[in-house]
Image (cartoon, rainbow, N blue to C red; front, side, top):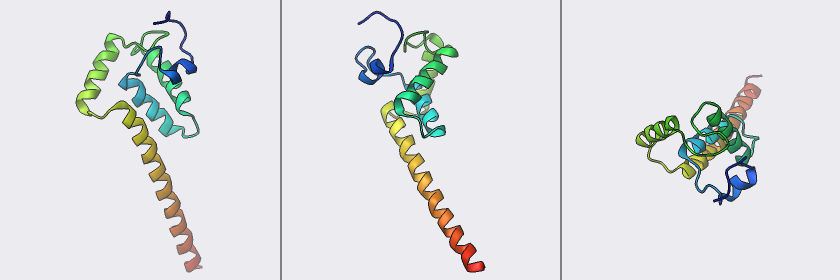
Length: 117
């Protein structure tokens, strides 16, 4: 393994330096992506890592969990046994479904307004 230093997005994309990201990172990244759909996956992961490091769930400058992070991860895995990679994809698919529902509702409302006037 290389020396631990700053994590670049290239390293995260390749995943060769650290392997699989912790479940906490995937879930926070999914939440960030859901709130800001314009962000890319790598941007949302970077934001998630920064926030988790800031609040003490990850060690500074790495993606290793602290004791606090390990407790949170074990609690999360007990609640929902879904794989982290699936969670991110599922949240994005759910967001797309919600957008299409909103568009359909807008079209229906526009048709109703035209009929009334």
